[in-house]
Image 1 (cartoon, helix red, strand yellow):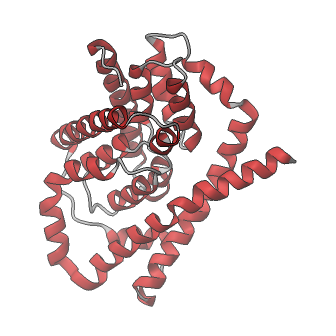
Image 2: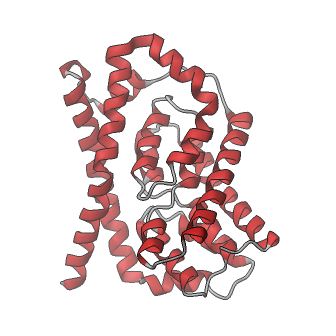
Length: 282
């Protein structure tokens, strides 16, 4: 019973943290659609080339709310795939608050965040160069798929969007939390221990678990001295919090979702390998 209560509590906290971000993202999209029309959408679209740089910087803020918001913006084609990838790569979920609470030196934290941002921005521009397509914003199409009743006004429409996605996140997070509680964080930790090369692939895979437990495990293992800088980087780069969960829910192009999932994993491994090869320490 204690475990069940702990899982429910963790699910409530994890889900509640992203609620403001979801609402603000949907409210911004409604404003674009209802107030500004095609002119503002054209401005957003033209400025999208700098999106990966902006997304890479914004993604470093703790918690995964911005990655969830970015998934919605991408589904509405307000931002590019490269911008979405940059946000996902730079997002660190629980890494930053854990390091701060453990009194980790500011220089070490700053170095790690800078590397993540630089890699995320570079990867974002590369993805845009390879995969960017000319697409018009699809906010109306997104609304039609989610039956948000936009005619009732931007506030009620944004709340409707937010409520639907929030319930979805709560349900999936609850299942994941129960699964992790049954498997145990020690088991997750064992996956990446004592495996210098395979550890990079394992850490990136652990990082992709859409739950804060992955970033908690990876960060604690590194601070305990049992995980290298390369594996830590691989896991933190590939992790996007609940961002990918939201993307699966709101973006109807399944092949595209799988491509993004694959890119995150590969880029996470590549980033970790570079840190390991160069001998970078935090």
